Length: 104
Image (tube, rainbow, N blue to C red; front, side):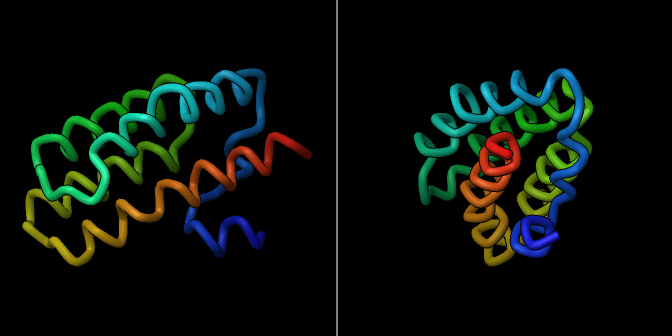
């Protein structure tokens, strides 16, 4: 519950046989991509990142990742830069929450 309050995601949806694979993809692919984009406002790069996040979410049945990716895309399309920055910053918390959940 604390994890969900902190990140706004339902970490319990990470249960299942693919949880370890999802964690690996988050840490080895998505996190480096997120770090490479950094604090930039290259909107095309954030759209690509969001698409990748959604694809991973759909591939691993992690609805919270799909929603996160959609939220980024929505912010870019609406040029809601303030909310985009907040959403972008949440990604490290999401990865940390997933990693913490997997350590249980």
